[in-house]
Image (tube, rainbow, N blue to C red; front, top):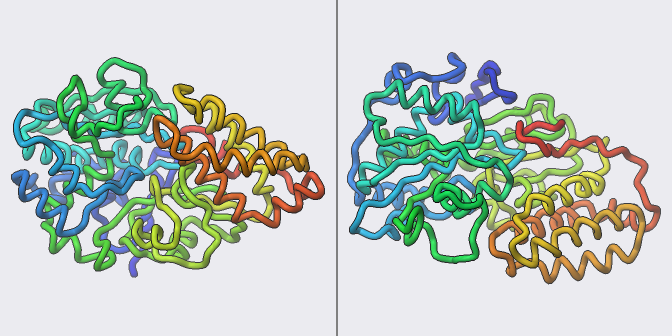
Length: 420
C-alpha cells in the first residue's frame, strides 16, 4: 500500500492519498489544479448517455457521498424521462467536522465540474447549479468556470452555511428563494425540485466520483477498493490528531491506517460520520459505508474524529448537544422542544443530577422518527452511541458529578473543520 503525503496547501487541512490518486490527483504538486493540469491528469470529458451512466453506476454500486449513501443509479432512474431537469451540486458542506468537499471545490474544482457537466448533458438538464456556502470554494469554482470552454450553463450560487442548510431539500428550497430549511414534504427532489422541475441533487464528492467513472469506465473504476464496494472515498480526519486533513483512500482501508496518517497517538473515543454519526467502540475495521453499516456504524459525511484521554468525553458531548439544538430550524416539535431538552439532560447528567439520566432515557426514546428532517434522528444517534461508548464516564459523572478531566474542545464547532 502506497501512501502519498501532499504538502499542505492554503486550506487548514493537509491531504493524503493511499494508493493511486484519483479525486485528489495533482495536489501533491499543486495548491490548486487548473484546467490545463486537470486535462493532462484526467483526459477529455467522456460524454455518456443517461442509460450508460445508469449502467456504470449500477455496475460499481456507486452511492452518494453526502451521508445518506443512496444508490446513484436509482436516483438517476427516478428522474422523469421527459422534460429538462435541473442538476444541482450540493457544495453546502455544513458539517463542522468535514472538509472534504471544500478541499475538492477549492483545490480540484474541475473534477467536480466534469461530473456535473457530464450528468447534466446526459439528462439534458436545463440548468447546472453549484450551491456553495464557502467563499474560497465559490471563488475557485468561478475561476474554474472561466478556465474551461464548456461551462456556459454552470451557475455558482452562494448559500447559507448552517448545519441543516446543507441537507438536499434545504438547498433546493434556498435556490428557489425560500429559507434554507428542509420542508416537511417527503416528495424527493428528483420528482419535484427547483420551481417544480425534477432536480438531481448530489454533493461535490459524488460528482467527482461520477467524473472518474465516466473517464475510466466501470472496470477500471473498480480496480481498487473492495469487490462489493469498489473505488475510493474521501475522509476528513480531525480531533485529537497531530495533523488534521483529508485523505483519499480505497474503500475498505483499515481504520488504523487513517489514524496513523493523521498522527492519532492515542484514542479514548472515535466518532465516525460527524455529528449525525456514531461513536465507534470496536477495534480496527475496514472503512467502507456498507461494511460499517453491518457493524451498526455509519461513515455519514466521511468524518473520523478522535478524542484522546486528556479530555472529558461527557463534557465534549455537553458542548456539541446545545450546538446541535441551536442548529435546528425550529419548525417541528422534536427540534423545538426535544433537542433543547436532550442538551439539558446531558448537562444535568454531567454534573451528577440523577434526574437528568431518567429524562435523557425518555427523550432519547420519543424524539426519533418524528421530525420534518433527519436532524433530530441524527442528533439522537450521536448522543445515544456516545453514552454507550463512554458508559464508564457516564457512571462516574452520575455518581461523583465530574471525572476530574478538563473539557479541551477536541470536537470542532466552527466551519474550518478544526477545533477552535
